[in-house]
Length: 231
Image (cartoon, rainbow, N blue to C red):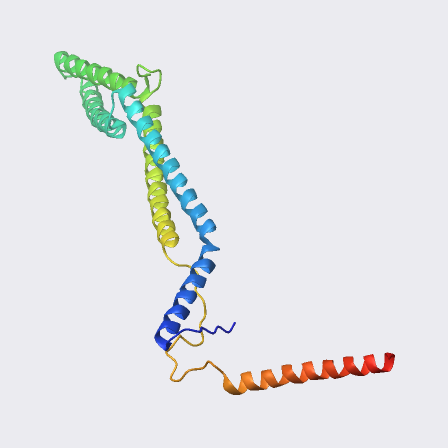
């Protein structure tokens, strides 16, 4: 595409040429504006959906913790298992001591009965601790089931956090694309001030006038010749 600007002076012609190029670039860039606006709206909707999903995941986790009255069920299970392991070691030690006393015929019966009582107490404590892990809570779930549910809710919340961050990044990128110019015109030569006037074109205009006059003369001659033949 070749563009020529006529103006009273070279500076005005250059300004007009640059203004026309800027206008053409704006029109070309406008062709992709609808697509970029649609991408921006989609990113905004995606961010709103991710925010709502993250809020729902957080509320679900808080609800589970409130229902079970346990903020850290894993820690509670670990504590119970530690107590159970300790009691089992004590029970094993008492059982070995009882077996040693029972194998000794001279062992005092009072000592044997004392160890038997300690073993019964340890067994009772073990039964109670194991029941705390397996018995249902007030909402009908075991401690292990509650721990699993809260763990799943925490993982879901972490996933929602990552999706929310990704949606925020995409929205930022869409906003930058929507506000920036996406398409440009390739200009081989930038507008510059003319060193000498291009118009009027004396030789071109003279030759054009001569051709027009010759054409008119030829048509007039043909017309006159035709009229003479008819007369």
